[in-house]
Image (tube, rainbow, N blue to C red):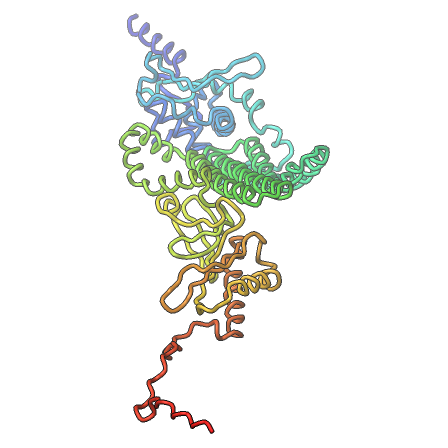
Length: 544
């Protein structure tokens, strides 16, 4: 009687608890799999489905509710469908699963990835710990999750494509992507390229019409600057949308996401650079047309050039930071640097002291404007014109066509001459050495004749004087003083010097001479010889 009761109990346990002796018997003996933790099971499933081994991936599913004869056919299909559901809705959730054999902290023998909804129904996506063939326990996707695969696939998977494309488009993946996904990626890139060109033309046409409605010419100049950045922006947005619809696997989705995000950042940075250039040119042209003050125009040009350089440098820096922050490694480095911000700031400050001081000097120069683009200066004993001002150096075009590159701090720390500062005219002396007998009034008349004729294009009509600057031991030093614009002063002085010397050569008595002959001083008459001295007058003859 006791033996019969024991046998009946064993039979009931076998019938009611099939998991106690087998799991997924229809799949056959499982290979060596790591299903000891939820994380290991989920990663094993993901690796198997993304390399196209759906037969192996089926061993990570609880298929015991399916008849054993159908498990071998249904298991790979369900594994493939679950792949698309997870890739589309829970792409990063697998990394959050527990790495402990008992699962979550409560020890409920299950670990939940997330909850997905289809209509009003909610389906939890879980892994459960179930008895294995060898008497232990393993982690697999729970029976409830496997039952929900079909409705979830109908909602989130490419179920409609199976009705349109041939079956071979859904065969074994290549590099983690099925043939239909490769085809979709090609169509996405080509379609995004064509649509971006069409949308750019339509957008430019609409923006151009809107710009013509305004009286300001700035927006008219800005619309053509959108050509290029706008096309790249549309391409990035359309490409990102197409990649989302393709239900790409994690690796391909990572690459596509970073590619289109990079293009998006580049397009925005490209437009900002175009915006700065167009705005600076428009403001400069407006001031040049409306105002006659050349000094104010040069000052504004200098400020715009320096500020544009500052904003361009900031744009490049921010764009590079956003590009690098896409990658986890760089982000971790940034967090580490922020954690040690004090030490890092000190080290960076010491290392970049020169660069930071030059940058600040460039900003200070644009505000105080000791020099401006177009100013005539004498620096380092060189005469030239300021041709370019950057954040770190100034380019001076020397009179002999050389370029003198000078660091910006030089103009803030050392003295220099700025001939264009404070006015549009300067005085220039011409020194001559002449004889004491030179007629100064004649020289003054000749200077006026030269300025009214040969020097008319250079002289500004303000100053034209001739004075005796100094009386030397043998000559007179004469100074002819003329006025002209800083850019014309040198040429005018050279012209006046040449013409006055030609005038003096025609009057050689006015040129400096060295006198060696004795002076013509009146001398007293020499005394008469003794034989010729005066004799007394002869006596008068007697009167008759």
